Length: 444
Image (cartoon, rainbow, N blue to C red; front, side, top):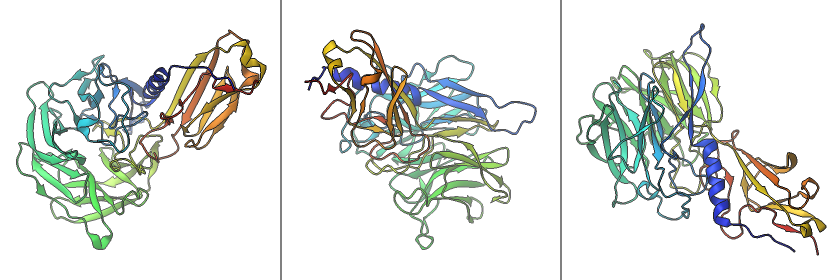
């Protein structure tokens, strides 16, 4: 068996860079408002000078577990958690290692005005998570992990959009959604469970707002979104750990305390001024007519966008948040992170002796729905991806010394699952290399 040596570090770094460019280095944006006289516009918005949307874990192909993007109410500004350009690129971390936000790599809050070419990093926001805007669009709130505190402890903070010092509002555990109400209150949920909480937007002691009803099968309340008039809040009801097809979207009147079920098998709902709620169902956004006065749905849901990144069904992380990576402005602008179609490409040559027998391309794991091409020819594919696979590429190779091209597509857009980490792509970085130029042959 003949094997050709490759630089393992280069392969790992290149694989992540290409995957990140496909899923984390730009935001999709289009308009949800009902405008019969205008076509729907859809654009990609860069995150420069950040290298990409920050990962929650330092693992290859990992994704943000909590909300990482937010639109201002007027749709003219976008806040996001970005990875620093000079951060710890390519760092790997074991799934059982410290998974606190403080230990997940160099990142901070960025804000980009739509009339600017680049985003602006906000000083004093390192280790930030879960950005959100004030109702008037003048402030950006966020959660900041403690530098030396236990994994899930940190502080709720805000910073003026026009510039100024960061203001601490309260101590707070790892969040599972935060929303700023127009009545001077901020409503949030704790990732560890329980109900919704609220705190004054000037700072103070948090107060419990809701309590899950065990008689109804409620385990926790999370992912709040306050309606524009401040009289009610949408939120997600988690009914059992990890059962994201059994979640519910509910609305609670902040005046009467009455709670109404709106949708089954849904999570992370937002209100749109067109008269709809938009929520996620296993990576697909749906819109459903909603009467904001009577707090009732008035029609059936319809699909809006497929392949939206959502943190669901991950069994071996610090726990799912259910958060879908999208944000809707009052003018109907929708910003989101796509869920998972990525490409890998590499050039290589083969020596004469390799062509004396069969040449195979070997992968330790590619998740999921991968397809492999050699010099434009389809060599094969695999629906799953957590077991090794190999492809006979002999007939597609060019003569010795000429440059060959290998391309791999990973398509995770049709699924909301994420297995042992949130994300997709070439994996299994331990042991053998995850991808070889031309790994071995059957030549004597």
